[in-house]
Image 1 (cartoon, rainbow, N blue to C red):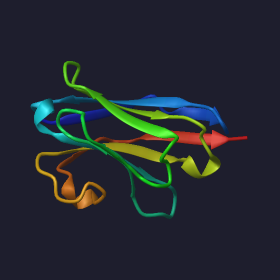
Image 2: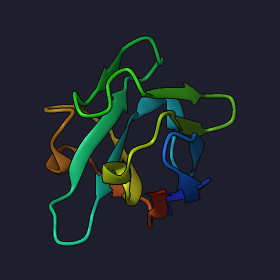
Image 3: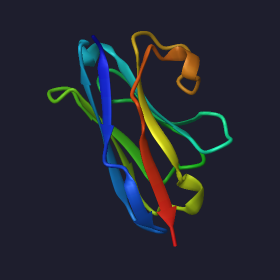
Image 4: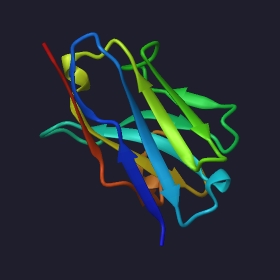
Length: 124
């Protein structure tokens, strides 16, 4: 049974930082492309960042480029999202997702498995 478990969310001041983690089990982690998405109330799920199998290639949404980075540790079956200079508009539930084969990194339909999400709130 595949499980993706996010952690590290919380309440942070505007301009602050958080690091999200997503621990995967039940799959061969280094065979999967990993992504982070977010969803704010009343809005569609939005692509944030993606990383390929080896971690060499990453893809970052324009809305967070220069502030967020994605990385992975295949030995720990974990993918990370480092979020710096947080803004109120970054407030959302953040989800990690895993894809066995990649079509469009930014499309939720490309991903096979999803975590339950973790809340991130940036407030002044």
